[in-house]
Length: 300
Image 1: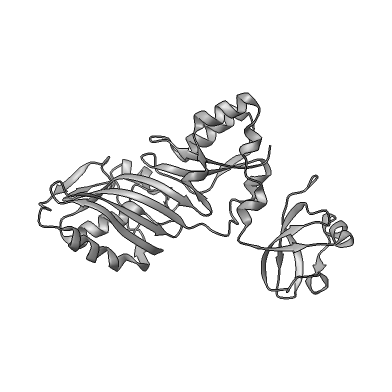
Image 2 (image 1 turned 120 degrees about the vertical axis):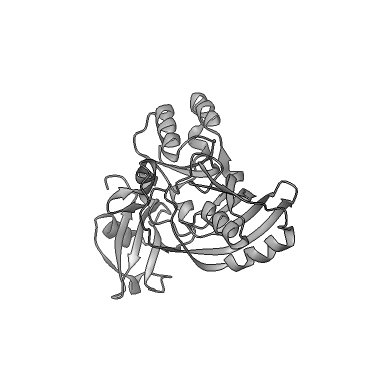
């Protein structure tokens, strides 16, 4: 079984928990995921099965979409509602218009300091492990890109609302809310998080773990898998003729200028053989040589 299935991750599961659960259902060891989600988060978690795991690190689109609940007037050590309360302040004067104006400053390239309760490594140690020991260390800021942020709702009576955020991979949504709260002078925490998009995958593509179990028992799970090459839709295609296909199958590098329809631009490509089968991910270098990057044919 090779391909991709999108899971609507349940709350209180880690991404690894989901992988372990799917592995126990379909009895296939080679399973991975793209894009870690916090246990409190739900939503889009692409699961890669079999040789599809090879594309996890070369997906052309890794942008994310989220719906995030928040509460102003509160600060915690985890930057979300599950953490230890550090401070509370009166946020009754903060209106919807004030928030809408403040979030506009987050659009574009921003710098974020990773929260202590995160999987980032500093000197080889996970931050969350240090945080659990009561240790706080300096964290260098990281760049993130926010392409869009909207205020979906806000209730001034309880200082709670919801944001819609589209951002680059690795963006900490709870840190956006924390920083927004500090900007407004009252603090803020994330109360809920749903990932609505991960690359080309959306909630509409997702099924539950229970459905995976059901489809597997019915013997139809393979019909729900997305073909590996479909996850690479952002890359251009190269179609080889019969001779070129045989050479490439045997690991021979090809002169891209001799491939019909190939413009020889430097970059990554989806490679199809003369029968239309997806065979590899290839890369053209500055010498216009097409070489194998990831193979997806039998025996490789």
